[in-house]
Length: 368
Ligand SMILES: Nc1ncnc2c1ncn2[C@@H]1O[C@H](COP(=O)(O)OS(=O)(=O)O)[C@@H](OP(=O)(O)O)[C@H]1O
Image (cartoon, rainbow, N blue to C red; front, side):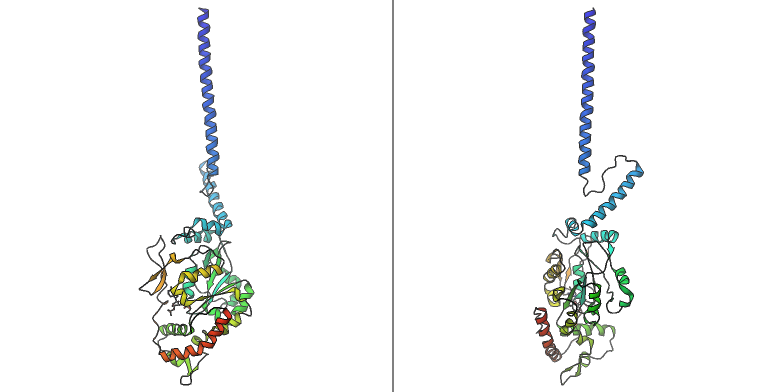
């Protein structure tokens, strides 16, 4: 009897031991697995909204999420363009999407207003709006949409006023503005070089005769009563004397204005865009603009298509929009009809100025 009781106790003890052991093992395994998954979760949060909080009380968790969101964005800001390029579809070389608008909103929230490091300084009617609208789809460019006319009309307002107009930019982004009248403003090069010697200058040039006709067409659309193009262009038509005091003529004497700029800037700080090639090969011209600005070539021929109705290249539509983007009605207007004789006389007039301009810039724009 005593022997039976003893062996029953032993069996019970064994069962208890096995039960305790299996409980301990389960607990141990559970801990190991839980710990590993916690570590993996934390590691896996790079680039995700926020790691889970250990003490996840409702308020604390919200506070933590807020912190994470701003840290994420500010680190995006610090990492700058290379990071932005990785996260934008445009940077991946695909057809352009609204990736840049994401960057824009990051810049708007976390960027700072800075003085421009690059300017489109001219020339009026050269194609300056097209260059601005095309370059601003680049994720590393933030541009002012309007013309601030700071270095010609508003200089007295001071650099702080000017800076205040600028869009917010991340450290890696270029701030850009365009005011085509700068190119022919005597004081502009000196004033710009006082802001920074290192400013990069873009000049969009176009056959000066076509440019003058475009300029006149624009003025006529606003003031229909002005004299004819011929009356304004010549002081004496039969003698072929051109009125160089008329702005529409004077602007096209590019070399005279350029000489003024070269007193303050090196030629290597200036980039000349061909207004003609900007229409026939926008991607090629924009490729060179990106190189000049030290930007990765993101804007390519994938971004453009030729709009037959407009007769000009337009930007393909972003994925978020149903509308392709062409420039407005005032860009690419039908010009006033000008007699062939007048055009030839003006071509003759501009030829020596053009040749000197080609020699100085080191490029033949083929206007002659
Ligand atoms: N893609 C595209 N779409 C429309 N227009 C284009 C384009 N590329 C260049 N251009 C030419 O740009 C000319 C206007 O030049 P600007 O933008 O410099 O004009 S302005 O000085 O800002 O008024 C404008 O001149 P006009 O044709 O005389 O209207 C166009 O020839």
